[in-house]
Length: 362
View (cartoon, rainbow, N blue to C red):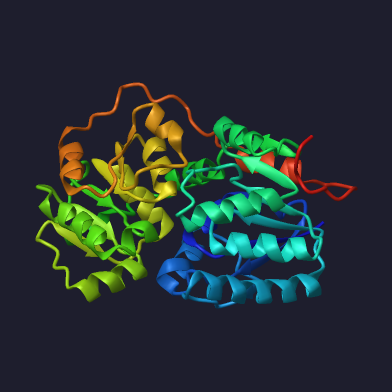
């Protein structure tokens, strides 16, 4: 079968790294990079570090409003789908690229497959929440990372062609751990770091970056910590930091975005993680690192339920308090599968002799 895969942002590159290797053994994959993360540091370095095939198409959409970005993607994806005539379109996660791919394929009656289906924050103010809800309701095959995700879909009446497969990012972590030896040493030497004696921070979601007062408050909390903080800065966050004139203190290290293997190495060596990233919450858990999430809700609720993740929002006082006091339990039960989610996804994708119907009530 010919399957078109849509990617556009760093977390999706990690996911396709796990799935594409297996998918291409059975099917012809056409890879479209929308260019949602358009610069080399945000996407090219990830493609290199993950051993991925080069995209067959790069739409080069770049930044812009949600409407402008999604509209440009829709036009470009539709043109490619009309030319390629795939049997399926494969999407991941909750980005504008995911939404555009699902809409374009559905308008052309091409069944869509959604990996990481069923996640819900139940916060419709998040653009990602809108994207994932629409993608799920348009999908013909929904591949979920957890039982909670399956239950979320059932609440919305989606029960047909829904499968719990685990998280393909766990597959990627297993692959990366074998390849990270020495990856953090250069950064350690440059910044004067020692293993388990620094905090790793990321901050990029629009709910934090678009509110300048909230964004500055979180940055000031980073500045107030009495231990080194390494902050790989998303380009959007870097632009706002410059605009507001924020000055990092001597212990806060603003660094360029890291490649995937470097990032895994830095997580594995950190004492604690501060993040608003969904992917990093899981990676922290799998690598046995306490995590404080800079949001008021999370799709990865299981990490909170087992006591390894705490939602601290944007309150500087709470952030500082939890950084100093949070100690996770000794127990760390398995979450999100066994590291073989990609195999399960490919097995469920095909080969199929009959096209999938749009998912819905059984």
